Every structure is written in C-alpha cells, then in structure tokens.
Length: 469
RNA sequence: GGUGGCAUGGCCGAGUGGUUAGGUAGCGGUCUGCAAAACCGCGUACUCCAGUUCAAAUCUGGAUGCCACCUCCA
Image 1: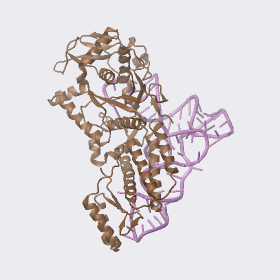
Image 2: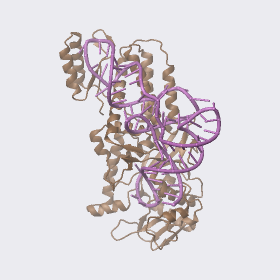
Image 3: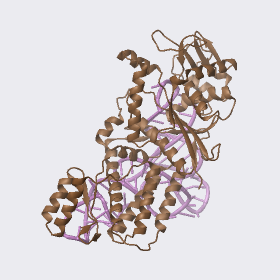
Image 4: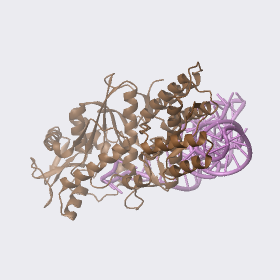
C-alpha cells in the first residue's frame, strides 16, 4: 500500500510522490523562542517527527529544516521589559526547547535556521518582489500587494472579498489593500534593526520562511508543515511571496498541518490562562507518556488535554514497558521451537497500513498493543520459543522506533539485581514473607518485580521494571 | 458574515456500506506460595430527522450542538 498524505492544498489524501524519488525535502515552521515550550509545541513537533521517522523508515532520505524566528514583536517587548537583549532571550528559550524536544524523543532537524542569520537574503528577496511589481514601499515599510497575486487564498480556501468583510484588524489606510502584508517593517525607536534600501528596519514575519526554505531546500520542495493556525495568514502569505518571486508553481507539493491541543474543548492559549508548559508536565509525567498521549489521536484532529488522560496513558505505557522487559527476560529461559508467526506478520502488516494511511498512529498503536497481548498470552501459557520472542521483540522495537517511543531497557541497578536474586532464593526456600517484603519495598520506589512461569534450575525468569525514564 | 472541521460504548479514541479497533475504567473468573500494571471472559456504541440501498453509525440532504481560522500563535 502506498503512503498517503493529506494535503491541505488539495484537501485530500494523496499518494505521496516526492519530487526526487529517493529524497524528501521537508520544512517545518519552528518556534519563536520568547517563552517556555508548551504542550502545543510538543504536539506539533512530535507530529512532524513521526512524519520524518516514517519517511525514513519507508526508505527515503529526509532533509528536514526548521526555522527559528529570533526577531519579532514579542521578543522585542520581552527584551525591553526585562532590560535584556532579544538575542539572550531567544538563545535561552531555544536551548530549553531543544532540551524538551530531546526528552520527547523528537529527532532534531538537519539544522535550526535562524531568521537573523538571513537578513541580507531577505532584503534581496524583498527587492526582487518590488522589482517584479509585487511589492511597494511606504515610509520605510514594504508591503506585498495581494491583488497582484492571482492565486491568493488557494491554501486557506478564502476569497479576498470574504477576508475583507471578516477583517477584525484596524485597517492601515496607507496600504493599497487591507490584506497587503508586511515584507519589511521600518524600525521604531530603540528596536533592533538592520540597514536596508528602505532605511533601518527588520523583516516581516513571513519572509523568513520563504527565504530560508528555498535557500536550503531549493525553489520547490516536498513538504511544508506547521500548526493549523499557520494556514492563514502565514502559509498563505508565504505562498504568495514565494511563487511571485520564483515563478515556480507549486512551491511546495504537500502542505501538512497538525491539529491543536485543547483544554476542555477550547484552544489552549495564554489569554485564557489554560496553558501548560512541557517542563511543568514532565514534573508529573514521563515524556514518553506525553508522547503516547499525542500518538493516541490522529495528528489532524484536535486533542483534548486533561490530567486524567495522561494518567490513563501512564498505565498504558507501564504496560508496554512491563511487556518488553518480560519478553527480554524470558528470552533467556525459553527453548527453540517452531511456532506459527502468521499472527505477527499480520500485525506488522496492519501497523504499516495504518501508518501509510496519513500517519494513523492511533490505529497503529492498536497493532502494538495487540502484539503485547499476544506475547503476554503466550508467555503466561508457557508456550514461548526463542524464535517467537525474538521475532516479537524485533517487531516491537521496530514499531516503537517508528513511533519514537523510547523503550530502551535501562541497565539493572546493582541493588535491584541483588534484591531480585535474594528474593528468588527466599522464594525457593519458601520464605515468602521475606520475598514479599522485598517486592513491596521496591514497588514503593516504583520498581516492580514480575514473576513469569519460566524457571531454570534455581533461577527464575522474574523480571523487574521501572516505568520512568 | 466567510472558510474549514467535529459529533462513536463510563471516559479517551480509530475505522469501515453488511464480519473484534485499541487504550483506560468497571465487573466476574484463573494461574502461579502470594502479587501483578499477567492471563481468560463480559459492553453489540456511533447527535437528531429524512433519503439512497437488499443492507448505513459508515453515502446524500436537512436540523441541532460544539470547535478552529479570518489578529500574534504549533
């Protein structure tokens, strides 16, 4: 089954065929590092991490870039209020972002490209648009003239008239159309600025993505992603200015947008005060639990967040870890033997079908859990074989790798190992009080001993696991 | 007002024109000394109305409700 991807541009799932058959070029709108990384960022970048991982798994070489908007109004304001510089704020929140992403097991892009490193290219680009008649300057500001670009609205499916009637913004009378957007903004007193043909100023928000994505990926590339909210105006404007400048259509072949994180069915936002940073959430929940929570809903649907949901996924994640540990341990005890692997093959097929269908991770998870059920059942009936467990393990590893779920077994700490063995000796001597005491002592520390039916001489296949990272 | 989307069992959440999603919670039972986050069994759900069809929760139309975007935002 070919990979199908929902394209916002066509509003349909399309068979995925990159421009170059072996290589996928992908650009995702990154953050403006003016505050802590929140749940919404987590969802977005986990989504595109899945896209990237699955494309790589499917045999493509993926070239993935993400931008950093390290100059903008919010950063300027924060710097002014805090008596510090835009640069130091941006650097520190960017570091924090990278740390959080690493915890979520999000693979880094090839490069995080910074807007402020590309000012010259942006100026050149704006000059080009003016020369081609798509842009005009007023008092040091440069605007893109919407009416010159015929396809305006093709991504967000909006007509200019509709946009005009619904406009909620105060209209700047100097602009030719209220919808014209800034390519270059004249500097106000005390703002960071760069010299340009139109005086001191700084780039508008949208131009950086056009300039940097085409610089690193070429004038046409495969995938451009971001949150749903970016469809309009950000991505719409990017298309206008890019296709106007390069005359190559389409600029981007597949547009992907992830759904939002909601709190009680409402969009999470600062103004509503229903805002959660990942750093805070990680104090209570393992990052892999958060990742599992994201994966349990299709990436384009809104996902409602609550404490209870994370608790449910904590249980599910523990179960996953417990099964994996059990599998590993039993592998040391079981014998050779032929066993029918057709069910495993079926689950593999289902898993990859699900992923091929626009990255349906929620459905793919069902295959993962069915596999755990199957293996746990076989173990508990004492019918496992080396062949089966090693195949199952390989499969679980593969699934988890595609999903970015980190299930790597931690080395067993010395005290755990010692106590586990001690407990087994106690059990063999039928000193059950002592055995139970040991198990209870560790379960209080969130470390669990689980017995399985396999034994070999005096040793037993009791395993341990610690569901935290 | 315009545009897009959603309504599924206690909760979360996939999906298909007729056959078990899955997770989680609950109930009953089982094994192993016990325990388990283990095993076995248990829920015939799909907003409402009309239509298409042999058959619709799945397609069409309408209604109702909810959400998002149209302003910085993942």
